[in-house]
Image 1: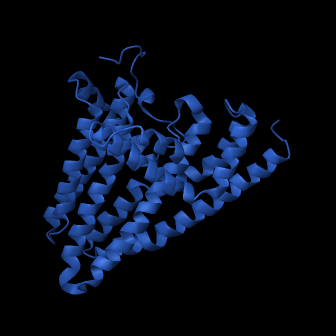
Image 2: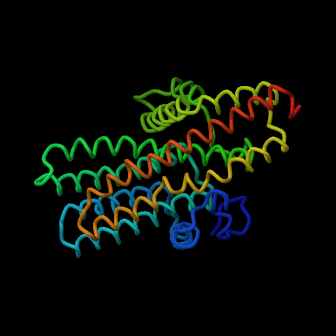
Image 3: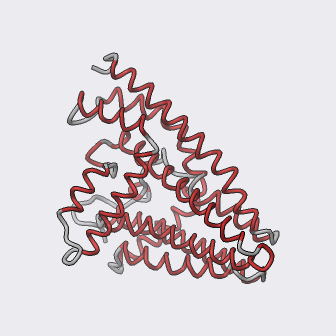
Amino acid sequence: MMAKGQGKITFDSTLKSMDTEEFIDIHFYRPIGYRWALFFNRLNISPNAVTIASIVIGVAAGICFYDTSLKINLTGMLLLVWANSYDSADGQLARMSGKTSQFGRTLDGLCGIAWFVAIYAALSLRLFPTWGFWIWILAAITGFFHGKQTEMADYYRTIHLYFLKGKASSELTDSSTLQAKSATLSWKRNFIHKFSVYYYAMYTKDQESWTPGFQQMMRLLREKFPEEAPERFRKSFREKSLPLMKYTNICSFNTRVIALFVALLINLPWLYFLFELTVLNAILIYMVIRHERMCKNFVNQLKSGNYD
């Protein structure tokens, strides 16, 4: 079975791009997700249903990390791997079936939040007898920065894909457009649609606040090239942006979960919080500084007429 109007379904056709794929994903989660996607597509199961299943499994995984039993922790690890294979499958299924939507992107973003809220709560309850109330403060601070790490990693990948695939095939948008769209919708009549657009607008607005250099570059591009940035500019941007993709992947799922699993296996779960606050925050700061510097260089080039 294949989506109407699409060609033959292949593994490569279900990927966003090789530029933005992480090693473990491309060699483990994506092949598994592809097989799940084929199975769900045959049964005509929607990508959103797969995402919801992923949320349930991931939350169950998080609950398993409350217990100090290694056996139960290992069960949680397997459940989390299963949940992430579904999280891979939902995007692959959406591209395979052509069933992409704003709500699907919002639901997919909420998926990771639900997993890690459960994981943070379970670890905090586990450590509470030793740490007391302080563990909740540590978890809250870590959770805040966790959100920033994944938020910016997602934004930089979306930006890279914009210049790789072009405006028409990109998910890159701006908060003002989304807010205007949200204003046309009613909470009473279009609750789910309005919620997804409103949430995505707030999410995008926060990403924009961290990237003033990129926002200035995009304003200049739109002024000079209203339809599409010239291919010479797009190629140059991709070449500069590509080395940053490995850092966006480190700030996503796989690296942090390896750190989580190690911390659980040695029964020192607080080390996971420490890893996020030190290693991943250092990478976040490096990503932001390097991306902003890159965009400011492009601003100078655009102002000097290099791409006219």
